[in-house]
Length: 173
Image (cartoon, rainbow, N blue to C red):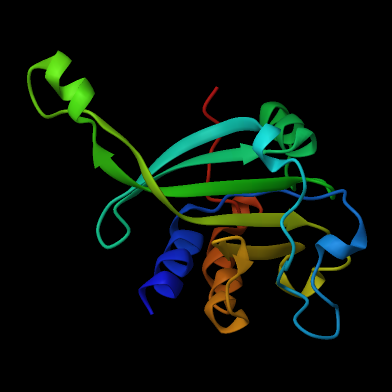
């Protein structure tokens, strides 16, 4: 249960993601659950940094928010709504003290990424995902899509921030 709750909470609190230009196989089957993406977009580890995050409380994670070229262009230009083809990825990790760094600093103050917890995506396709504000949502744990039931609260939460086209994360230049 914890592995499902963590991605869900992180989606609700962190995601801020743009659209996608990838083959149709990246998207979920329209007839099954059109708001969910079931395949990891290729090349996401080479995308540019949008921002970093720290989630406290039960999540207790750190993360990197990345964007494909379409998303980065929209962020830099302040373009809303985000254009179709933009994708934002949120890579989440537990965090752990860095004993090596803390020895240098002389006190406990340094934390580094620990074990990965999940990867999340928001994919902008205003036609395919019209029912969810133009966004497809995804959470992957250990490279596998999270159960559809755990994704049901993504759109209702993101829909509360319509002024930013359902995106939580702000660009950190």
